[in-house]
Figure 1: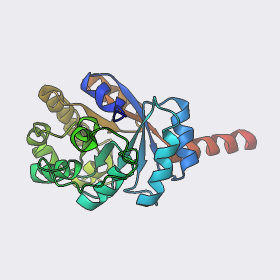
Figure 2 (figure 1 turned 90 degrees about the vertical axis):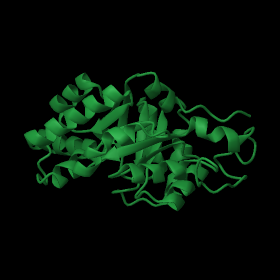
Figure 3 (figure 1 turned 180 degrees about the vertical axis):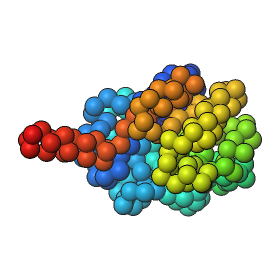
Length: 255
């Protein structure tokens, strides 16, 4: 059989808007529920969520029931062994947090690919290979893998042009919370210098011809980012949706 197509990678390469949602609760049913709604991609967070590598397998299986939705696994660190484990259990799109230099980006690229291009360890009987049934998986896997590098620091912003030019980096993604803290505005994601830095990063990515994304719950600023060129567009977080819904329900009943 052929290696399944990475729809998200293709869409981003073609410049199509991709609407996504953050999955932070863990649990395969929650992941499948979000996929069933019709988002283009669901971010499975293992960086800040209390979720381990093994729990991602069931989430990937749940989302697989909705082939129009692509799962993206955000790893907890730029770690070769960690990335390998997620790839082997079937993740095709990986987001690596807080990449600060082109050397760190090179390390992430190497972790994504088999030799001689990279250093990913080879194993034949994995979910990624459909348990050995994918034709020539070792030579075709790279075609369907998508690496999304997060820029979340002034150092990352300074290296953005080099990172964007690196073969194997498929998209960039801005992290406003960490970026605002690193710029000296902890908790103030709406600080004018932070917004200016983000819009500059989007413009530079657009000039370099690489897709870029962002997660922000500020609707007005997200619209500004989309107008500037964002196509990997995270529009919500499951936990925030639950909080908003629960608070609205309580306010209505008490009112």
